[in-house]
Structure formats: structure tokens, C-alpha cells
View 1: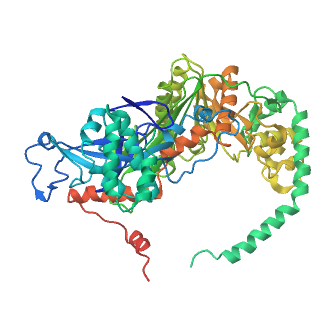
View 2 (view 1 turned 180 degrees about the vertical axis):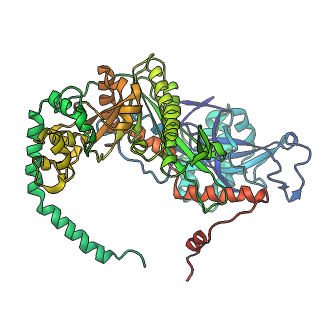
View 3 (view 1 turned 60 degrees about the vertical axis):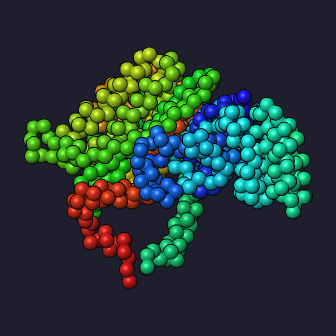
Length: 232
Length: 404
């Protein structure tokens, strides 16, 4: 199933490479999109193939984990898009209004084709789990992704496999990336996005609702706020 | 303690007061210049400017090609077209760093407008460290070598900019008209006079700029290609000097004698003193219009550029009067000349008063102060890795430390 990119209207296919990590921490990363406005949407699951090399020898505190070659150590990091921004690529060059004489906002880009190169879309993603071989776990990996790692949009199969467990919701609910209100928006968007890609969307959302009820047992208003956002 | 701004401010106030006092006089003289220009016979100006006795005059004089004071409106912007631009920046040879080298960074862009808009931005830094790059040697005397640094490095960079401009044009969509525009002048003023020996001029022009201009002209055989240079806030006085020639009542010998003191205010031509070409064309050109075409009588262009001899016109972009220089094969082609006018104006409109392609080429080329520091550090690191000595001058160290 294709996911529509933000604003551009271009379809992003599951498995498609959508960007590259430009900032990384244990719990989050920032990725730059290859094309302006071609970001995976808020709440989408994305995946990074993480290959351990001699640049990261201390995996799980054990030196020498690189021995045995990169092939054997291929793993994936899973994350949920929690924010998207578009701005000047060069922080020293502010964006100015250019469309006073244009009829449509698209015409501004047609008249100024360099904007496609000088603006850039970035998205931030919260890490919600990782896999090592066939084992998929919903807690943070030992090391953050490397800068310039490629970020792919997850396929429906990957979303289905990852969301068999709802433990990742605790990472999202407690992430509070830009304030609690935004965290709730991200949780709801994530569940809507995942539900739309699954065959049995209803069962999935019911399961997710139950998991949220446990997470937010002492905060009913917040729980209701999220549940209200789950309707398409 | 550095500059005492309070003292400087008093001097600036005095300057501003003096300028204000002369405002009426300037307006009166400028009106007189415009009237004289509109009445002047272009063929007479041309005859006087090209006269042998005028070769030794003390000022440079524009030679009108057709009319002297005409103005022309732009043509409609074509549906599909490209604009290419290139610019350069460099890190000069620095005796305070341990290796003799220089770096040239050429940046540029190719914009496609119309039905398939696109933008390509590029930059390519190159470090020069070999002897044959660091020095230009006289082919007739190996002991006569001149170091490539300072103004000479600037000339080499200008050649590289034109070379990259040609590369950018090669990448443009086939058949689409292209404006290839650079910042500054196409005239290598620095090579004029007696500043450089002949072998330097040959190296920069015959083995550098002119082959690249030839390449651009060849690229123009398959498409409409207008090559131009854009000079913002030009300080040129060539047309004003042509007007000085019109106003001069003396014969040749007296003219040479009088012109040596032409700032005296006593001669009829002194009405033009203190004015630049852009002051004159601010009065003559309406927004969007260009002036007549003139040929520069710069000796470097006249004697050494061959088929690429430089012509120029002025353009009122709406924000300023800019000078546009074109090689002869653009100047002599009415279609290319009009295209350069139309597309430069269009570039200024898109760039809020300045050609957007030149601005972006500059952004790609610029080497900032931080870049220069980083370059120095990387150079030192590379030397250290090879266990080579790293040193700097005590003067430089003193400036960096600034201790009490």
C-alpha cells in the first residue's frame, strides 16, 4: 500500500528509501528527505538498516563485536515519525516571501527552481524498537543509528510484524517530544497510519486501545483524548 | 584600542554636509550632460574616440556602436530557457602556513525555466601545490618565474570561472536558449598597462580565457547562447568620458594638455567631473530599459581579445543601473543581445534586484572565514599525520593569542 507524502502529493511506497540520518541520539534521530516535501507522514513507521562496523566496536559493552563480518551483524532500528519540518538548508539564509505576483503557490517554485535545492524537508523519528536477525524487540537499541544511515518507509508486512506487540506505545506515550499534546497526536497518528495498512484494522485498534488504557490508567482525560483521534 | 568612532563620526558629518551643499550644482550639471548626450552625433563621437591622437588621452572612452543615447525596451521572456552562472573564491598563498599552496573553489548553477523547471547547483574546490601551478614560468627563460598569488591568482580564478561556466552550459537541455552570466567584468583589467610581463598575459589570455570563450562560442553554434558579465554598482566612467570628448573644444594637442588637469573646473568638459556612467543612465533609462551598445577601448580588450572583444551596455533593473558586458559575437547578434537584456532583467526580477543565478553561484563558491580556519587546521592535521613539521609565524601566533 502506498502512503501519500506530505504536501507533494507524491506516493511513497513501503520499503522506499525516504531520507538519511543527519542527527542521532539513543531515543531519536533526525533525517533529511531526498526531495523537498517528500517526507513520510506523521506517525509513519520507518526503518534503518544498522550495520555495525569498526566505527562502533562497543556493542552491548562487548568490544570486538565486529568480528565475524558486517553481514552477520545486520540489524534494523524501527522508529515512528514524530515531527516534520521544512526550512532553509542554510540557517544563515532566511526564506523570504516570493509569490506576490504569482497566482498559485506552486508557481513560486516554478519561477524559482533553485528553491527545490535550497529548502530542505527533515523529519524527526522516535526510536521504538529494533531487530537483530529474526528477533524484534520494542526497546531502545544499544547504540543510536549512524549518521548518513538510510531511512526506509516500512512495508505493511513490517508494520504488521512490528505491531504484534504494543509495548512500543509506552515509548511513544512517554516520549513527550514537543510537549504532551504533541505526543498524543503522534500516538494517534501512528495508530491510524498502522491501522490503515493492516488487514484487520478493527482488531488492531481495539488491541491498541486496551494497551493505551493500561498505560494511561491514571490519566483518563488523556486516554480519551487519544482515543478520540483514532477515528479516520 | 582600535578605531575611535567618535572622531570618525565628526568627519563623516562634515562629509555629508559638504555633499548636501553641492546637490543643486550636481543636478544642474547632470541635466546639462543629458542634454549634450541626446544632441551628440554618434558618428562624430566615434570618429573622435577612435582618432589616433586620442590614443594617448588620459581617460578611457566608450565607443558607441550605433546611436549614442538610445534606450531599448526588453522583449518578452521566452517560454523555456536556461540560465547558467559561475563564481569563484580562493584561499591565497599564505606565508603564515607551513606549505606553499592555494585553493580555488568554483561554484555555479544551471537553472531551467519554463515547462520543466529544474536547478543544478555545483561546486568544485581544487588545491594547487605543484611548482607548475604555483609559478608561471617564462618559456624563453626558465629562471624567470612569477608566483601565482594575490591579483594574479584572482586572474587565474577568473579563467576557471569561465571554464566552469562552459561546463554548465554543456549540461543545459539541448536546443533551449541559454544565458551564461558571470559576476563582474569580462575584461581582465589587471593585465593592462605594464603590470605583467608578456608571458603572463599569454598564459592567462591565450592559454586560459580565450580558449574558454572560444568553447562558449562553439557551444553557441547549436543553440542561442548569450554570454554576459553583470557589474552591479559599476564605477565605470567610459560613457561619461565619451561625453567629455563631445564637450571638449580643444584640438588634439591642447586636449592632452588640458585633460591632465581636467578636474580644475575651468574647462568646458569639466561639467562631467565627479559623475559615473550610472549617474548618467539613471536619468536616461526607464525601468527595464537598456542603453545603446558601446565598445570598450580598454587596450587589453582591443589588442588581445580578438573575436571576443568586449562591448557593453547599461540596464535599468528597476533597482539600480548595472553594466552588462558581452563579447563581440553576442554584441553583433541582435537576437542574442536582446536575449541577454531580457533574461538579465528577468533574473533581477526573480532575484529581488540582483540576478538570482549569480547570487546562487556565489553561494556555492564562497569560502567563509570559518572555512579558511578549517582548511588551515586540516592542512596542519595532514602534515602532522605524516610527521612533517607544522609551524606558523610569530606574528600570526601573536594575533591569535592577543595576550595581555
